Image 1 (tube, one colour):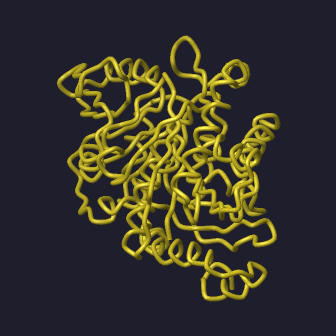
Image 2 (cartoon, rainbow, N blue to C red):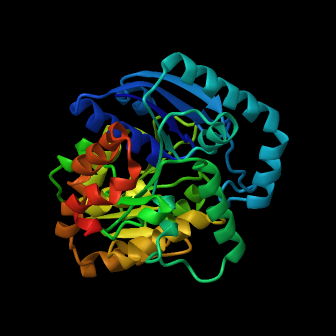
Amino acid sequence: MRFLFIVQGEGRGHMTQAISLQNILCKNGHKLSKVIIGKSSRREIPDFFYKKIHCKIESIDSPNFVVGKHNKKIQILKSIFYNIYYLRRYLSSIRKINRIVKIEKPDVIINFYDILGGLFYLFYNPKIPFYCIGHQYLISHPEFIFPKGHKIDKFLLQLNNRITSFRANWLLALSFREIKNQLHKKLFVAPPLLRKEILEQNTKNENFIHGYILNNGYANEICDWHKQNRNVKAHFFWDKKTRKQTTSVHNNLSFHKIDDQKFIDYMRRCSGFATTAGFESICEAMYLGKPILMIPTAGHYEQKCNALDAKINGAGIISNTFDLDKLIAYIPIHKNNTSEFKHWVNQSEFYFNYILSLNNRKDYDHFSIHCDYLPNTR
């Protein structure tokens, strides 16, 4: 079959998931004809995505978050008004998606959590099977545990899920663990889509902290902490466009622009990982058995959900700030129970190849019968 991907460009995770799924599809005889990626003025699409996706890429202007003056906190209300202001630009992007779909004639469209992918289906309703992939869809599962409070944030996340998945045939909810599908909600629980490079790594401990920050303002927190702890080696990754590949603040503290191979190499060699609670980087650290300190980006409710879900599944601990003392204290007591998680992740090729092959079946009502072959539907 011919596939077309629509990928949100706001976070690194959606891009690495798209690369992983493309590898699965091509290995099983399918073809990815084109990728449409949402971009914004705030972030660069990293070079590794262009190198690894192995097909033509079309970029479109897509909604994104607005951050505060210190480049840390996500400002939800301002983000809403900002994206309403640029609505005409986004409508133009939706028309561009429609033109691309007419030219490419894909058999299946897969949306990696971009709002415009859902709005394209709302406005144009193409008769093409539509799958939506993301950890965010797991919040519709009755076993999902939410952070306490945050009722408005919870509603907005549920609304965003709905917008990204208008007219979707199935929601493929990436999960830290195997739990039962909710077929009446069109919700299929699937393993994380980790890159093959992660699956092939041999790990060791070279006694340094590895990290990733979504918003560059958190670098100041890390620098302030390191002034009092100069003997600790730390390497953090960011996507600050104005800086060179590596910025050395101190002999023992460096910030690196996103580079997939370097990121993986530091991950496999570190003693612990500190991150702003994106789903994909947490999964990569879990697979390699690394203790994790999760600092949800301020105002980013989705990351609060990620962090709590990961903590429940034994990934690590949660903090409000980059207080790396907490990670250093946690490393020796972390219980490295990676075997069950690895087994779950290693089934991803089977799960996705099977689910997506169901597009060849005319009667979706029999999907529950076919799913009896899969462990988490019995």
